[in-house]
View 1 (tube, one colour):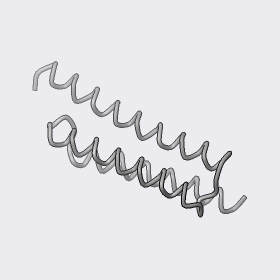
View 2 (cartoon, one colour; view 1 turned 120 degrees about the vertical axis):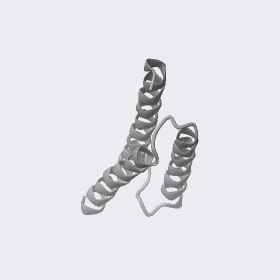
View 3 (cartoon, one colour; view 1 turned 90 degrees about the vertical axis):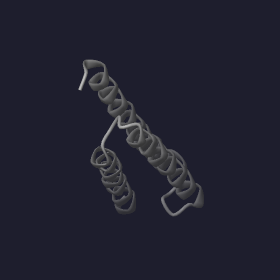
View 4 (cartoon, one colour; view 1 turned 45 degrees about the vertical axis):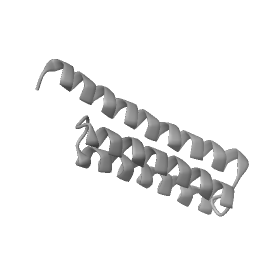
Length: 92
């Protein structure tokens, strides 16, 4: 694999990871300041953001910029972190 291809793969992964981190921050701010996890608005924002990220990942996989496993890992990690936030909100 050429250096350019490796660079594009690394950039794609970094951008997708940054988008996942942005979603986590958005949901944390929403939980801290606006709504509770039971709120339909919270669910809609979360669903929309997760769908958008999954489409970005699917696109990157189709371009062979990341592997399916890497994409799944990004989504799984985000879901785990969101579950931790949700549980913390429930317990406070």
